[in-house]
Image (cartoon, rainbow, N blue to C red; front, side, top):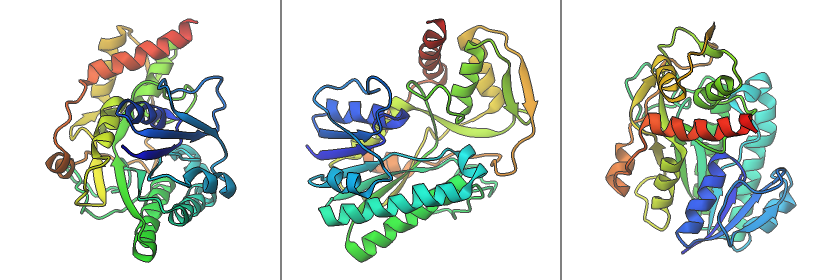
Length: 309
């Protein structure tokens, strides 16, 4: 079992990752601001450290003695990075470099980085994307993620810091922040639960690869302690769903006939992104995935409970 640090442990993916790692017997340290009254994760025996990612002193003390570090914190979203690209550079990129430097000094064995598989390949028009495809991001958020990936390569060449980049598709599920404007499924479900119309970009033909968060963390934890043949892995369902198909699923799950407001597609949106996950399946085995309607049902139950309080 490993001594693992999860940075961003009170976030959407990070909190699920803490639970999954703890359930498998790893010694877990959870790091974040923890501004909510209680942590989002439910595991017992987890060492919780409140701190500021932008404070180098906090990071230095955090990674000391760690074997594995999961970098699952982002100071921006795609929307905020687009409104101020320099913010993403000044916080996400610069502080990630500081983190990797601290990991080298602390003798960390491996860093897992949550990158993006949804936008990093850019608008190349392919049916699906493999890890060896060109990376042509056009959004500041994805450009920042690729910059961090490249710095990880630098730290491996210069300092021997091993790392694993996880290019994650479009994760959805429980514990997503209620007011974060990221992800079609949680945004639409919140609008439905609040009795508002659902906003749709474009005509509904845009395609994404959706992955339920608990399936995602199972994929990640299966990698821990196993040798890796590669440094980069796509993590997704391998199946594309159009916006129209997602809205149809929301109709089935919620049984609400909601209105739709159409908005122009932002210039940085990619029309189709589906991830080829053969590299992962071949190396770590197939993970049984949650059906789309079931994953949306679990997500909606949590969101609806919030609005009914």
